[in-house]
Image (tube, rainbow, N blue to C red; front, side, top):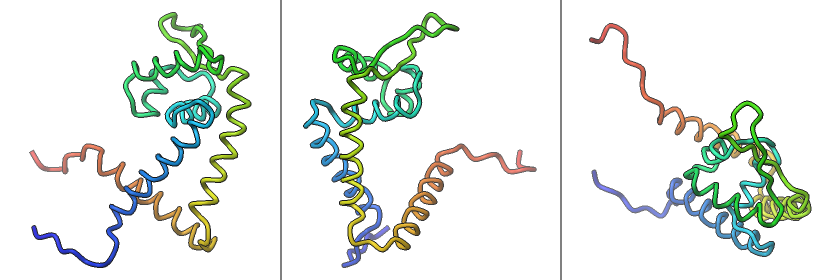
Amino acid sequence: MICHVTDEPDLLFVLHDLARQLRVDANRRASAYGMTRTQWVLLYWLERQPGLSQKELAELLEVEPITVARLIDRLEERGMVQRRDDPADRRIWRLYLGKPALAVLEKLHAERADMLRMVTAEIDPAMLKTLQEGLSRMKSNVVAGQRPKAPERGVA
């Protein structure tokens, strides 16, 4: 297959580069609070879903459980995360935010709102709605494409 070079921006490259630039910006913002972007996302998930296990959190963050354990260790040292026993399974830790995380999350929410303002500046609200719907559809398409296909009926 021949790749044709055009003056038109390639959608996949634009999406990839935008995501990369947002990760760089989020890392910069998180570092102002002595954190990494991954720690920020971890706190964000625990705020939304208190009591997640380390395994569940690893799946959400798309990292190995040992990586989450190390992240939690660092945040626990700062009092930002608490590990609590799971009443139904002694092998599992349930994770909860500590009080110090709440003050930092308030500031990080302001950073996130600033990032959203920056990325959506000068874009018409109707276009933003269409863009969000389109990106959501693209995500669904990719997720559906990753699922194993069911065998066709009548095919042996």
